[in-house]
Length: 274
Image (spheres, rainbow, N blue to C red):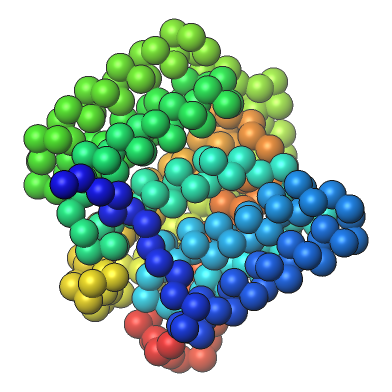
């Protein structure tokens, strides 16, 4: 029987999970009371939680790095930013598919859900680039799961979605993105510089466990991280999305990287203890 395997339970009995739940709810209430903009506050607090979730996917061995990422998120998103929550949530699920961090076998429902959410993001943003991102994720899934036949089918589905999206919307590039002003270049270089640093440190991680207690090969987590950096680069160079989305992705990169720098300074090693 097909079921959805990409969900991860946020167990409130686990201390760090309880903290993130309490802080997220507190942010929602405080922001709503201060601004009287409850819809915007919901987006802001949901972005805070997704920053934590995305950092946990990228750095599964260290709980605290995700909290550093949320701190950076708060510093970078003064006020209530515009965030494409659908895109961020889709990214989280795509990374889970590539790493198989839930420990469960990918199902047809998982792939249909990822495809549907990708189409939803593409329709909302009116940009065919998201079809290419979907196709790329399915190619990585094909590599990750020993050339599974179901991924061959969904690679073709991704190609069809890409052709349809590019035909319908093309890949519109904003004028600001074409000009690549100094601020965009700074964001791109900053993200890639810190992102490369984190990738080199992550390569030394060992004994990563999935949700069922099995071992996850670090090369697959690294593969998903490189994919994430690719999405970040596209957001800056091609799509020109809401500033809050770029800030959220950059906050994740900076957060996990700054935590590794702290580990180096404190001589805790790359695996660390939590």
